[in-house]
Image (cartoon, rainbow, N blue to C red; front, side):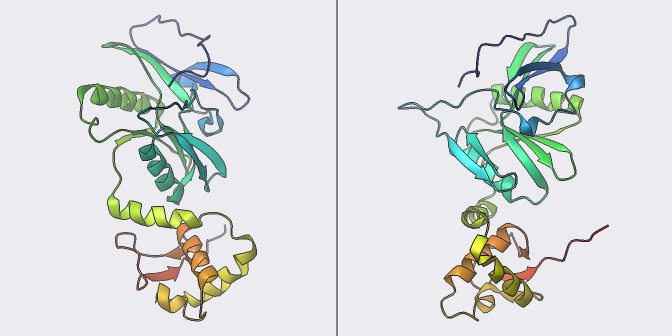
Length: 255
């Protein structure tokens, strides 16, 4: 993968340790900011800092994912990164996220370094999480650990959280992968949601919830949609089955 265009903005290193963020804003303008000025930038609205090329024989599996949480199509570099996009999209504490919206350009005691973090995540409380998605076979190698250490230090300077992740929990992933197929808006089926939520005022199995209809194909799809959007709650630690208990989420409190 290569930068979007030749870098025209370069930091000048006047001190032994500095950190800059190099990015393209929503209008496509190239920008370079020292870390102490970057905390208020809405990186979730910025363009990707580099392109995701495709070519015959490549090892990665790039593609695109529509994120329901922010109604945005995001490019990803690998299937593993796409998995983490889907998990973030399902997380009700996540407001929105972006793929590689900037590159760190820094210098520390070990020399100069650059790094494109994989995912910038804005939580609903306004806080930020930076995720690097790494092949589990590479995650503990010295090069990856150095990258993680440098990125974690940069995030501490910015007041952000940081994680380097590999494969997600298999049980959680199986559930989220299934429900993701029902994440899109309901449109014509929206009235069915009110019936299902009324019937789920107390815990009820999926089978019992759908027993009102002899062939509940549409109602089942709406049920899974409500589960994806956390309007029907359930135990995420257990496999999704007909006997899975679901119940309506409490109505949101208004100030």
